[in-house]
Image (tube, rainbow, N blue to C red; front, side, top):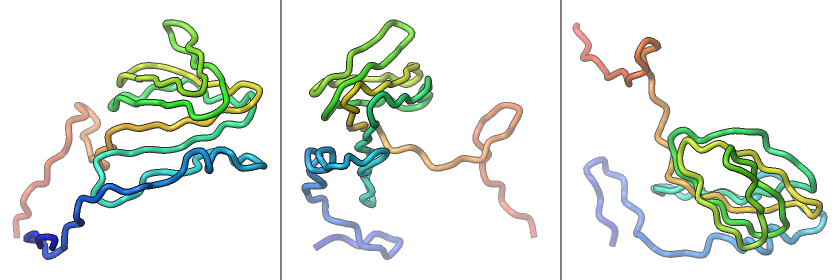
Length: 142
């Protein structure tokens, strides 16, 4: 039986489970595009998505400043452009994108579907404009 923490909410029991069949998500005709699935379970420490790009679609140059990302190509092909050169994206390719790395993605003629996995993003923080350090709560004076 799950323990009840001090806040009175019952903790979920840690249980391994099947989340989805990626092949079924990416093999539909007509093929869906965009985010096909995302990890949304409560209490998770990871974020994950299944993304589908149609043929020749392009995601512009961007970087993830705070989180490392793993990318696993599920179907199709394409390329990832990086400052160091072009990386081929083919079924089964597994890429590590260290935080701060810059890339863009272009799907090939058959489109591209891939899984991304990274640590869950921290919650929004209020920061001071001048130094961008987190603002801590100050006790109220009556």
